Image (cartoon, rainbow, N blue to C red; front, side, top):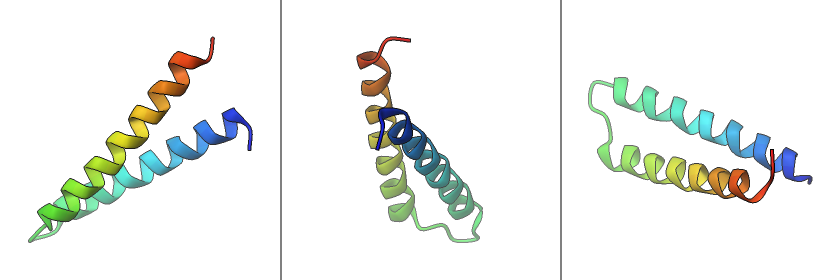
Length: 58
């Protein structure tokens, strides 16, 4: 898997997690623990994407 493929995969996962967070928060009784877990996952992906952007020249 190339670096660009990895970045695109991470961006897709980030978007999917964002969507899952939005869906969960719209429920009548959202699961706050699940939302917190999803937000942690999203942050880890964002950090990894950030490392790639600082490591590779544009």
